[in-house]
Length: 304
Image (cartoon, rainbow, N blue to C red; front, side):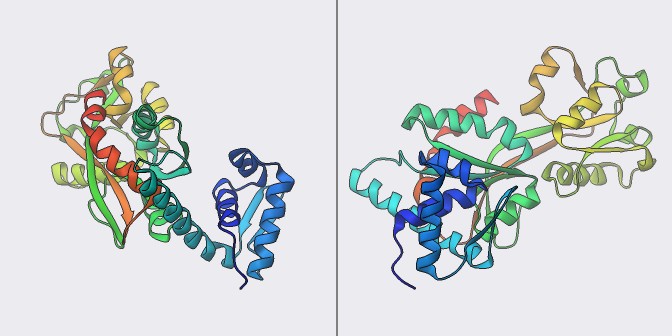
């Protein structure tokens, strides 16, 4: 393999992350032909095809997938060297984060807002998926860090608790009385629950808490499984059942009396959002972001 220019690797990494030549070109402030030419030059120096192109975007070849990890390490080392020489936190590059659905909607924006107050504008790419998928992306090196909910351990990924949240059982304020009058966890035997999809950290936490409190539920055939948080909230607002939603995300609905928290005396479901990092050291902007996030924890918690 001939020598590889680091700039070519940075361009390749931008294309791999964006999934399209056009999107990467905008991120890099280059023309599409310039980005395409750099990818072709890199492929020539590697002696292998790194990605395939279609109308839907690009797909990494096996060789391209292997190269992504090395490109991320090189980008991180270059950023680290720049910071060590300047003695300041990273102000360039792109921060790549994996985020579970709830954290992507309600926690990551607050972190980025606090970060930009300290260091100015930062390019950020957020890979949003359920917790199981984010853990996989971190493990394989697609993203250097992730923030997930629900899990306390995962193979080959280090989890560090960040902030605490609570999953609140809620119904629509105008829901049928049989839903609004629930007072104990055992009352959930006879009513439909609106669930997240399998693989969701939120679902895992709720399932564990319910099993501990009341054992195996009855009438589960009446449950709803719409999938994502937005769909679950919409079903709850229609009075279709009990939803367990993050307190971070429903304060406005509670304040406007659109949703009502059920006072289940024997059921409280706290859960942590945790940082997920693959085994080994992280570097570059991701490392600096994690360090800064720890200093921002009080501000984030007070605004949650």
